[in-house]
Image (cartoon, rainbow, N blue to C red; front, side, top):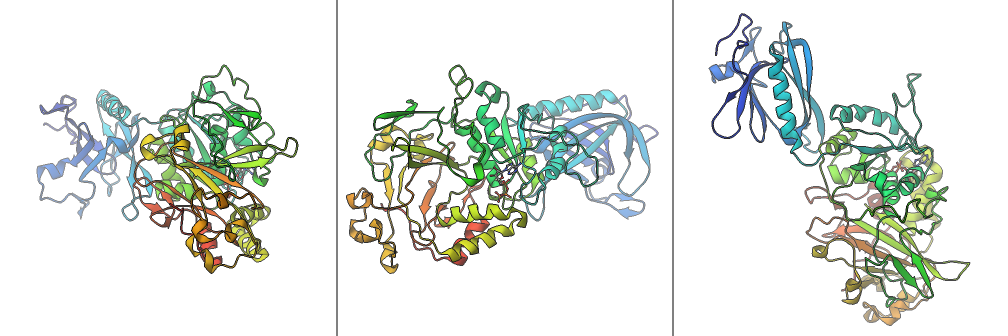
Length: 575
Ligand SMILES: Nc1ncnc2c1ncn2[C@@H]1O[C@H](COP(=O)(O)OP(=O)(O)OP(=O)(O)O)[C@@H](O)[C@H]1O
């Protein structure tokens, strides 16, 4: 190859040197701040080598008399490239240590870089290649884009909700940091036009957001919007992204699922033989009355979800609207951590880092997340009938002590994350007793999806009763569970279903919207008196799954509160 007076390969060099085997091609470019490289493209990705190192492998590159070996050889997989752009004529620096530069046509390759010390931490990095021939640059851009597009489905259009008061009130600022990554990757992040969002513009240095960033105005806002948009509209998006904490992500899950997810309810405790309707049947019969799904939802008195009177009301196009079914392989839920604990982000990406999460979303990375549908049967004062109150949980669900801590902590949001410690201690000192009984339907992994009528009939219906260490605990509530002799406390034992438990009665129905296989998620009722709570466990550890099946601490709070303030004595389900 001949060089011109600038040391570049001559412009009359053919754009690509095709190598016979496969679709490998290469060209020489100037890589900004590195030097002249031979760039090679194969079916997996790009690689480049410094021309000097090609001439003499032994010879270390020198620039201004200094040895410079880094970047002499590099490889990038298409799976890690999130944007490629032709950026026209401009300066390309000849090497890292020299100020000399050349004007040429350029294109940039935006890549996800994994931290060397903590591989779950991702950062964006960019490589700028220059060439005197614009056509060569453009051809490479379209080649790389063509390969990039055949990579795993990446989102093109996302619905984004930002919770401005999440965590330490940095929701908007965090979105501001990650939004350019979405624009670089040409992912549209249009927020829905529903009154949800307001436009924030920078007017002072301290304002939270710049540009058109849309934020929620109140608790339940994002959920209401998602519940009220039609399935047809929702299908225009590849997914929905929450910029906020676990609570906000959960609110978004509810907005999508409550009116759309159809599954039979688990039996109510105390009534284990209640028929469970099949998945195809959209109604659950309850004594004399039919409760319609998915258009009816019973509002809970959750303090976190006030002001949501539209939820559960008939969705505008409930009848004509095409179905939006779950499990759903195409529609995604994303979270960009901005909250106080961010357990879901940590569990799914391994890091608590908004940029890492944004890059995961942009590259279309997927983690199948187990969700639990929880049904609390409530007796309505008006009709005296039991009605289901449905909730979904992605990381954990709490009842009793845990629920009280969360409720109490909402009063001290101004404290930031410390509110959990404060509220936890306060509620602990109140020393309330809680009682519960849990019934659940187990979904076999191979069946996937939600439970069916057959599940209910073939014995997969289970009851969680209190554990073998019961006799060590003195029950001061004189409850039916503790009055039951241990030997009687078996699945389906009539004594266990005696409806003499006061307080709340809970059911749960474990569903798997998209199960990855492997060990089933266990849903443990971990305490009885003092601190009843549910945690997800697997192999005896609290946690949820991450991408690679590793377990992460499910929730700092639960670890702290449960380990620090109480002793757990439950061991799991009766077989
Ligand atoms: N604009 C808003 N004002 C007040 N509350 C909101 C608003 N938007 C959403 N919320 C509610 O705030 C609750 C908590 O939000 P989020 O989970 O983002 O923060 P966090 O509690 O600080 O974080 P984490 O859940 O990780 O501990 C959510 O349940 C959500 O419904």
